[in-house]
Amino acid sequence: MWVALQSDNPVEISFAQHCLNEAGIWNAVLDDAAQAFSGLAGVQGRRLIVNDPDADAAHTALSEAGVACRAPDDDGVEPLF
Image 1 (cartoon, rainbow, N blue to C red):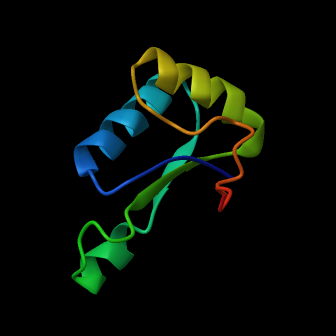
Image 2 (cartoon, one colour; image 1 turned 180 degrees about the vertical axis):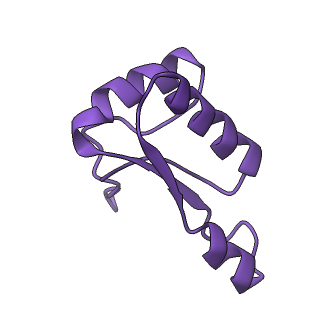
């Protein structure tokens, strides 16, 4: 699974999910319930995922809609230096 977007903004996640649905790309939101139960809104954020083979198409669809998302080759690890 490729994490297309991680955000604590439910409107941003919802819009991105709508864009992917319109493009016919399967997607799912993770960590939705965990954030509700933790009581720490904005700490972890929700993750929007797609299947790995759909990463390029999802990136294109989200970028065209103006959604800032990860690049398909981004593994989510940022260098320390």
